[in-house]
Image (cartoon, rainbow, N blue to C red; front, side, top):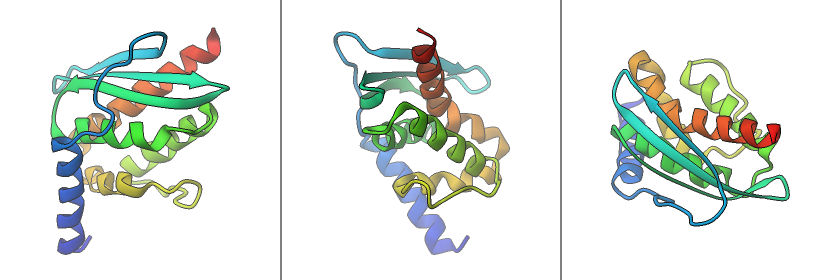
Length: 146
């Protein structure tokens, strides 16, 4: 990755960390999942409003490193309006990206999320980046089981 692109990606991550999108909590009925990463102390709560098998709104609260919180900010933006299956599919694509695998970059417009692809070079940080995504997947899977 070129140094200019690397710098841009760091700026995008820091922007989401310092100015998180969708930070906060909903009142009323939501799909709510709390997860943590015991190896580094990151904690996240994801809340989703689900209507007609789609994620109509998503929010998060938590504490942790810049990668963890920036990823939650990006994820909550990306899944709004997606069908539940699409949100899970996007999560799988994100996971492949984090593991340095080839991924389908044409299925969804990943936008700012691509800024996190450099995390793949730091295996200890992958769990930080995927924490919110795993919480979202768990929430959707729990929702389907009801």
